[in-house]
Length: 62
Image (cartoon, rainbow, N blue to C red; front, side, top):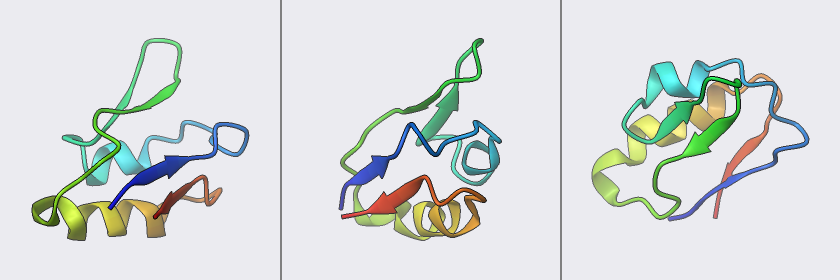
């Protein structure tokens, strides 16, 4: 599974960081970073929740 970020849509609300801090990170300039785009099954539930909670639908799974 791969996480895809639409940087044009992302407002850096940080909800995804709160749900899955081991996968997502906001830097000092409020830019969202995905620590590892390819994720295993162990993190799947948290990542799916983060994607679902994104208010701008800037995240998706492939």
